[in-house]
Length: 75
Image (cartoon, rainbow, N blue to C red; front, side, top):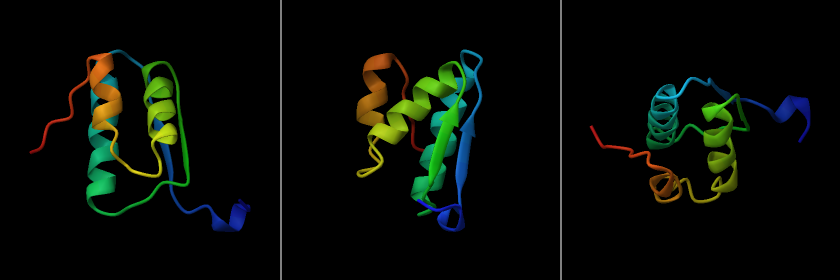
């Protein structure tokens, strides 16, 4: 991937319960068809970034996050 093709970068912060907010942000992005080229994070944000990057093809993270105790709720 060249630097010219990078359009959207998602950086997720650490801090315990803030990990749930990161999940909601990613869900909102995917619901609006906004794709991320790079995902990174620290602490719980790093764990979430790993899950997002690992499921990047299907954008169905709720099934991957559920075993970790996180729930992504529809509004």
